[in-house]
Image (cartoon, rainbow over all chains, first blue to last red):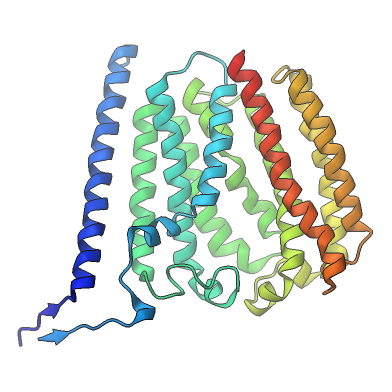
Length: 46
Length: 303
């Protein structure tokens, strides 16, 4: 049997918003690691 | 095919629901005390690394909050203060809170390790473990000393931030930890006097439930007697200056006065006219800690 969950428009919109926040959080973390690395280089820490 | 409909009570979770899992009000207090620890620690520091360290502390506090809500969903569903939280209200599944808590715990410790090194990262990991496992899973349901011992988790952020900046934790950092640690019992017991019935219904062994209101009022006063002089200690180690000393002396004296009023009242015995003394102490305790640390932030920040 092949069951598929059909999301309501409200659920789909909520999922999209959640995904956006997850994406922004991951992007923010990547930026943070980048800036930490730069700060470490600047301070001369290997 | 399965059509999954939703009712009003089960509206889809929003980002705000996941944010609520992180207990943002607790996060803000932890960020503040952590920031004071970072600024008060000796040395120039680094803006980016300092920001990353404070962010890691904030995210770790949020992770601890999510793990707490995952484990305490049964208690939260009973208590008036917590029954509208995302899990008991059915908007977020328990497993989601668990995974969010674990993911953010790992990310916060990794970030701290990258930004500040092993001591700060180790202390941060210990704090999450202490709050989520020692306090939430063990102490909270088993002893009226739950918030006394568990308070260590909320007290550690200044030491973590200190370690993040200097790579070590000095006596002054432990003094800041001790102030928050001793401040926690009178703060929470004043609140628990007001919510005694809620805690009893949820079978949480808070002091007013297990030993009664009178014993709680005595304990509140005893801890306040410790807190007032302890708040002055940074003045004697050279950590703080005259502004802090005045704030600590006046604030400590007023804290003691309010605790004495609670001691000589019948707060927690079901009379609104008597409960107001516990409410006054609870409200002032927040102001006391905030102003005390703000004075230190001001003095050390300008130094």
